[in-house]
Image (cartoon, rainbow, N blue to C red; front, top):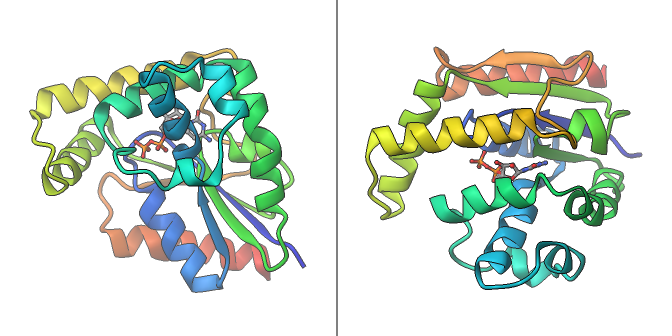
Amino acid sequence: MSFTVAIDGPAAAGKGTVSRAVAAHFGLAHLDTGVLYRAVGKRVLAGEDPVAAACALRAEDLEVAGLRTPEVAQEASKVAAIPQVRAALVDFQRAFARRAGGAVLDGRDIGTVICPEAEAKLFVTASAERRAERRLKELVEAGHPASYENVLADVRARDARDTDRAEAPLRPAPGAVYIDTSELTIAAAVDRAIAAVAAARA
Ligand code: CDP
């Protein structure tokens, strides 16, 4: 039996952590759909056409190093505004969502466009300042030092691009459980997400 959990929200809101914890708790497969757009963005930075790169995307592209840099994130949000790029990635995401045993997908448009019929939908967000603090910590830990001001500006630029685009803009899906993690510990955010998914499974 398939069971889909759709988790959407802006950059660095804690979606990844929450999604991995929900998947582990319920024994579901997990797909971070941002990696698809990052992989396309990385191929574009290497000189490829965005639509051709999205159509030719292979599983190996999702495993390459260097997908989590700020440059790739910005390019990902640019290619993500191109309708043909999004269209090329739909079938893969829907097939993953409906795999036997169930799946968690996290991204920007999972509950609104990719899986509007998902059994559980969550919208995970936090203030831009809190998200910039968290992203800065991740970057520093990964060996990419940056300034808080630059990271905040990057978060805001990506928020604006993701929210204002015509195709699949970032929005809470109707009926999504809204979790603002600004003042929550990771454990508390995870507990809320697990409770919401458990209620949908009951
Ligand atoms: O990890 P972070 O939240 O910073 O970003 P990500 O989830 O890896 O996504 C990178 C970019 O891909 C986003 O800024 C979006 O523009 C785009 N994206 C999207 O349009 N739709 C998705 N389902 C996932 C990501």
